[in-house]
Amino acid sequence: NAKVAKLSDVAIAVNDLSFRYSPSTPIVLKHVSFQIKEGEYVAVIGHNGSGKSTLSKLLIGVLNHNQGTIEMFGNLVTSHNIDQVRQFLGIVFQNPDNQFIGSTVRADIAFGLENKCVNPKKMGKIIKNAAELVGMEKFLDSEPLNLSGGQKQRVAIASAIALDPSILIFDEATSMLDPKGKREIKEIMVNLRDQGDKTILSVTHDMDEILNADKVLVMNQGEAIRFGTPHEIIGDIGFLESIHLGMPFVYQVQEAFKKAGLPLKKASTMDELVA
Ligand code: ADP
Image (cartoon, rainbow, N blue to C red; front, side):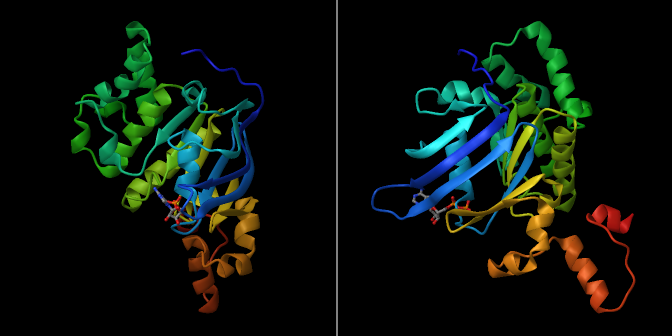
């Protein structure tokens, strides 16, 4: 597989993307446009049926688009070059149990590397580094199926980042996890962004997660109706109410304290609030 070059510092450019599953079914994406710069973390939110997972399937090439364009690092994505362009992508899905191939964590992370014909001498170090990045280095000899949900997703992330993708796509990656697992994964996502060069697109139901993102794309009935910073989106309470999306939990708590006349410090994350 030939390598694809980065021709632009825009990691993902979606322009006027429309989609329907078949000629007889309704349009489910309508003229969607947005750009994600290299190193940015973008959360995609919206109700069930708003088109989030269709959008992510088009981005990862599980579905082919035929109206509008998708570019990754300046490379126009087509059905002919999707395999090459996919080298930019690491993907973490919703169900941690469906992502394991290996009988140990080590074998699991190795699988993608073997597929890519990485030099076996280099593999040990790559696997160790990837496991360290997600705090799973002590579990390399464990069986994936014995891990907690959050640990399984951490291994799934390690398997993705071992291949050193520029873009990580998280498709509802925290939605099946308990609160602790959700926190673990969200922390790793922030670390991956903060450590430098990873671009993150995360499709999520979690209004608290959007506070971690640089930008938020709001999908509603197939349209990208807002694209802004978390504070622009959350600051517009009328907008969130008009599309029936709730406020992040930390703001709900602050609101409740205010109404009850109780003092509470200012905070923009639950961690800050309870610290
Ligand atoms: P979300 O991820 O935001 O819940 P989806 O992208 O799954 O939204 O769905 C968007 C719309 O596309 C919905 O109306 C859904 O019913 C429709 N849809 C999803 N998958 C298919 C399919 N395979 N065939 C036809 N319509 C589909």
